[in-house]
Image (cartoon, rainbow, N blue to C red; front, side, top):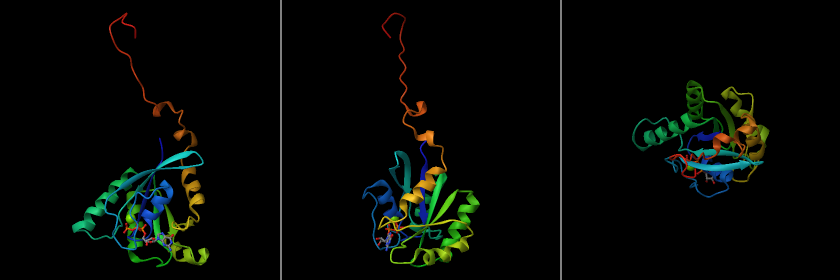
Length: 188
Ligand SMILES: Nc1nc2c(ncn2[C@@H]2O[C@H](COP(=O)(O)OP(=O)(O)OP(=O)(O)O)[C@@H](O)[C@H]2O)c(=O)[nH]1
Ligand SMILES: [Mg+2]
């Protein structure tokens, strides 16, 4: 079993930027534009030789019709598949009511999640994250997805939740099994 980690949050908080950073790719589109990502995007990441799957999702808006509702549906599928959710918030805007609605919904679903305060670059991280303790969590990870700050310690904590030998390549359950079948004496 390889941990599946979903990136969830309001539009424009930096989910796709973090996805690209974790997958060392430019697969996800990034722009200063709300609602750019609409579907789910899967990628592979590794840290210290440990593998994980990361899912980028569209921003959660709470709007229940049109394209926003369809985007939300895609995000809900990602949530159902995830072993851990990284719930991204934007340190530049602070905590907004839609963030609280997302937390509420994660708690209702029983999703395991970390609060990740992105965009701490140019800010004092301690001050930047203070607002987010209102969410009612004891630990907040301060990162800058675009500058690559705080990502390693975030992912170390994330992967520590999962048993180490599970993503070992020698795990028999991950290997392809081939069975030879045939009549007796044909040279199986
Ligand atoms: N200053 C700063 N800007 C960032 C950081 N991470 C992302 N951004 C910027 O924030 C904007 C939105 O980033 P995206 O990664 O597209 O955000 P998203 O959450 O995927 O947005 P949607 O797909 O619309 O939900 C872009 O202009 C990014 O360059 C960061 O760590 N610091
Ligand atoms: Mg996006």
